[in-house]
Length: 230
Length: 384
Ligand SMILES: Nc1ncnc2c1ncn2[C@@H]1O[C@H](COP(=O)(O)OP(=O)(O)OP(=O)(O)O)[C@@H](O)[C@H]1O
Ligand SMILES: [Mg+2]
Image (cartoon, rainbow over all chains, first blue to last red; front, side, top):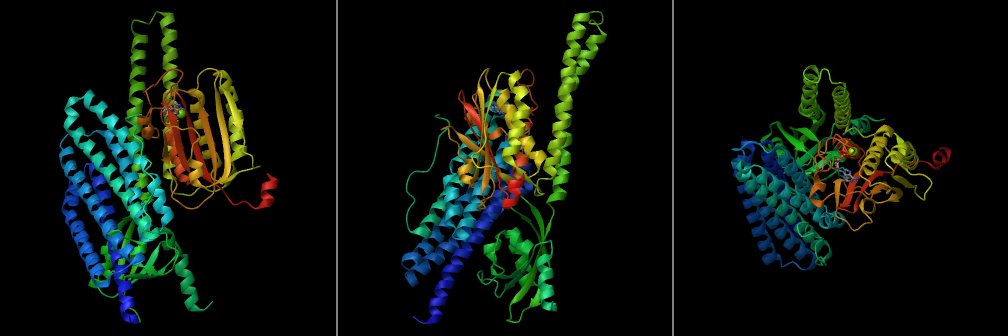
């Protein structure tokens, strides 16, 4: 192969990764705005999250198409193949995060109609910050091929669960205390559940980064604990 | 110094983060590169090179959008950049079209201006007012209630009067403590982004606080089991008064929640990484309330363990919330304002340290606070 083709093949792989990182930035913004929307009861912000979700869907389709094309035309092997597959999988997880953010935003539009649930909102804010931190950290890890950072995200998987379980109890207390809050609380519960699932996608991406760099799947189960059973 | 070197030094020394971005085609993502980043810019975006792919430094859509406008529409644009992590900052970003570079690349200047303080001051003031008025309302109402009773049918009843005056005194004390704590919290919050100056020998400091807490321990019949660390000294970066506040609050809680005759264990360890520092020995649910951004620092850690009632798992995430008290107790031997751990949290965050709680109902609690260590020349260690 001549110099030119070799370079542009490398370029193609690099730009695939770059597109994933850009999509990551977009996803972070969507999640951040979704959380901010529900915490600050900002209808406009929530509505804008719903509208912007299309961009993420489009970005995913684009990355998928380019990956498939690259695999078909260049037939990459070993490291290169892993990079291509990783890009597609990362994009896939990011798109799911986007859907969850959009769902949070849609629920926000309903939650805003009832009275504020101040202490609960604070718990959601805390959980949102934690999840966003994990997402951001794992996209950093992907962008910089930083195995250590990916492992750190992976091993702290259970913290989000603790927050979710705590919020779950708090919500139950609320609903039992004042049945008028049940509708808003039920939506809040799904908001929390969605955040937890975004956290799970961050863990998935950590696993993808691990696979991309080392070629090995992660061994051993996730450090999950279920507080509700304890 | 030749002029070109002077300019380079000057740009590097500017306090606001600055980047120069180059790009060729709109759809060439990897072709957008930063070709210059001053020291503040490298620190903000956590990059080490002075040149690299733009996306490896920023991926915020707002910022990327502003860059594209400047590069390809040749107009100035603005955006807001928020950092994630333990210390969130909010910056105004301005992108300005510069023209073409020697190699035909389009160039744009990206400047960041920190607006965190402005927003913080505003929020702190709002929070302080809301908290103060909300929390003072109840004791104030009860004070007026007692005054009314004392003026009315308890007027000529000396026993009732004594009793009521006692309660009123307690309420007034509580209000005073509340205001002191809130003021302290607001101050700490305002300074949260100012890195602490000074170096403190954590071992020495903890020893002093433990000694000072001895009378309180004796009064509650709680033994203080202080185990200094094996290494002679553990110097950490931080502000002495605030670290004292951390140790005091943790110790105060441990004593307060210890059963009669039990011991509170205070341990230290130094020269370890963040993961080891945040680990707890007991197989209990644990949660980090403050976690430093990963940095490869070495830490000194303090662990305070009590054999008290412990904290149920579902309550752990709320511990450092203002005014949060597990069973809402506001009076009696275990009374408090519920601001202690909120204060500790903000101090630990400011110190780029970590705070972890490990606890199980009926089995006691361990609070772990760890601070980044300072590099102290050998001579200084001996001197102190
Ligand atoms: N060592 C401990 N054991 C059991 N519960 C604890 C312990 N430390 C803190 N808690 C729980 O966490 C709550 C918050 O603690 P925090 O120190 O913030 O407030 P406080 O001690 O109630 O009041 P303050 O410190 O402001 O006087 C406490 O009310 C208590 O319920
Ligand atoms: Mg306390």
